[in-house]
Length: 104
Image (cartoon, rainbow, N blue to C red; front, side, top):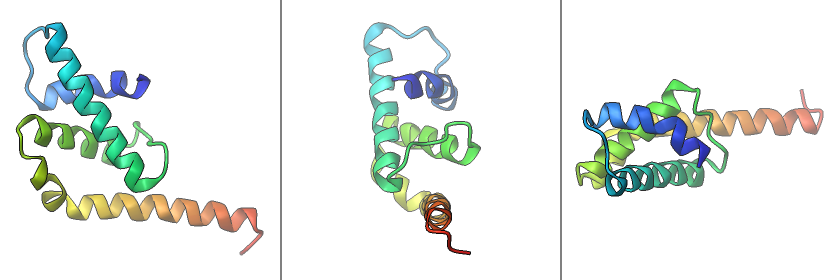
């Protein structure tokens, strides 16, 4: 839930929410944010670094697409960025595994 609270201000900015949310609207944006986090955790198999601008941007834009009922277009429009993220996480995992096994 902490991750949702970190991302929520960014989500609301990108979704151009300029009013005070009622409880139902807040639950709506939190659910979409949780779904976006879960989507990328499933894709990367890792906890996400929300301080990383690339990660944060992808998460927030996935929520924007969800909010606009265009989620089916997200992967298509952000395919390159998603692949870059997956490769960077895979490279980090490979480097850590190599260190653990003493490979040079």
